[in-house]
Length: 454
Image (tube, rainbow, N blue to C red; front, side, top):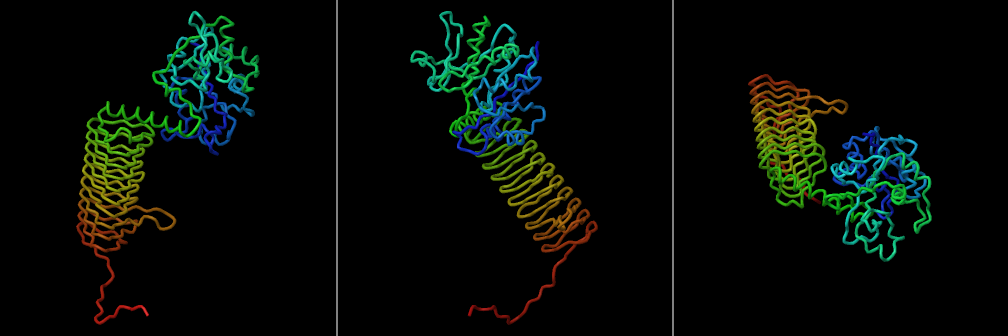
């Protein structure tokens, strides 16, 4: 089969977005719309992806950071036909060319695969959709035999043609050889004064090519974004698909309308996910995991039976089986919690490896540290890991008890079964089974009078 090349049109300004940000960079599910289109093109196995950019070109390139993409510049936005023409020099004559749009982000891979699977030099593949209210869209004009004859844009359509509810999505596929023959002959004599890519449909018919029509499973697959209202509608549709998938795979959602998946989320069975939970990046949840309301979880693996309580933030962490997190805990990158651990309310960890059964219950900061098994860290404890220039580590052995309001000044090592008295500032290593107390001497002054305001 001839190689597949994908041309993505992403040069428009998107003035109706009322934004300085190029339209294709506005996000759906936490990623720029153009990111989704490029990702789908890669999944199709495209030999090359050509993205036509214009408005905010430097910003688009910098934001996407896609070295595999061939960026094609369209200095003047003169219509879709003109945009595709800019990529012609980079298209091999024998290529199959699929045209996609940077502001139509959620077309399914399967929809596009079915569309191009039988494409060759004898046909043109076109994706259409039926709409109850087709206003603004190009109409699919068919002949008496039911075959597609042409696409007529809204502003150029007759009253009769405007009653047609089958419309053009803009997505089509055809051989590069045909494109190179047809695009230079396009005319801009129309209501918009632009070179329409859709005019090649009539050219294909005139050259006795078959126009093969297919449709997506859901119209949202081909919905473009022209304003923030449409962007929000697309976001909600996408998130609903994610919610339905999770429920089918074994999760109970407190409210399917209040969950956001902004990356890749894989799950086990019998999960409970409360409202307003956000998943970002790559997240893996085991079975019997419970997640409370308002949590944000990013690039994290959570093992079976773990409980994440309300309003906890977890990023770049590994959470062991039956661990308890939160409420209001923050696990920063590099945190690794073993089984049956506990990180309680208003605790922050960073690059902390916490052994099985250990507890950091509340109001503590533990960073650049390793904790053994069954360690108890009292409230208000901090590892002083930064000297203003470098980070240093704190090492805590098994069965250590750290009293409340303790400062562990790194680098420092506490041996197994050490006890630290509350309110201590520990600056030297403590050997196994020792008690360390480091406090200023208390003085009680009798007869002292508190200062009074004049």
